[in-house]
Image 1 (cartoon, rainbow, N blue to C red):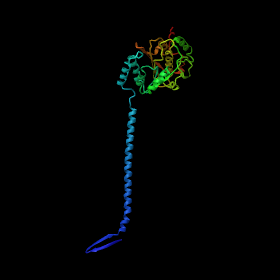
Image 2 (cartoon, rainbow, N blue to C red):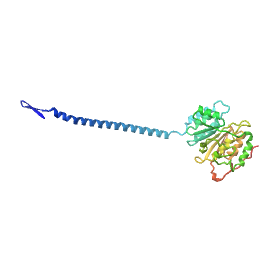
Image 3 (spheres, one colour):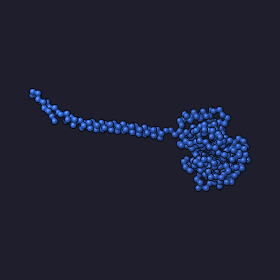
Image 4 (cartoon, rainbow, N blue to C red):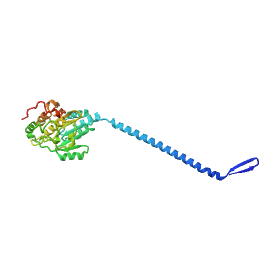
Length: 309
């Protein structure tokens, strides 16, 4: 409805309040609709930006992880080697020998599987040098192995019972020669071996790994009734020849090569033809190749050395 008011020649048209009331709801709905659309657009924009940021960040992190260095920087490795070689210890390995092993670890494809017989003053060093790989320590002292794992959680150590004696060296070598076609074969799964000097009580998983580097620096062997390293050397020789995949060569280091047990056992099970280098600082380096079991070989070396008297 409208009312007309005449004032001289001017006419004023007044809208009835009822008509104004009819128009307000439509305007409110329109404002509400526009507001909802604006809020929805804002939320969509924020979510899209957050999603893009998250995706970009994840991509950068993944790329960084994929391109992280697989070996320690040379400066760090040199510092570790220098520091370890200068620790005051009568049982410590020389700097020359430490460097020889560290050079091989540096060239090892990552991840590198490194097996060490003996918990020694170099234990932390070996674990650090093989930072991106797996380093496993085997020791005859169960209490010391447990202590090292508790004090240094990053260390993976296992204890093993050795049944050999240094005074029985010649008899042990002779028994292996007699059983080389059976229980003491150079290619076998040691987990199921009944060879007298084989280590068959390690965790099962360790027999399934392809070891790239093996260091024999234990067990102790400086008195007649001590276990000596004959079992460790035999086990290292079999593990190297029984690899299933990966690199077909295993780098085997033997410390205290000047002692009789180490010299005799290495000539029997690691073989002179595999000797790459021996230093005046008591370290011998062998490279032992994988042997396919179907080849039917039943001897460790091409020419057996005579048994030491």
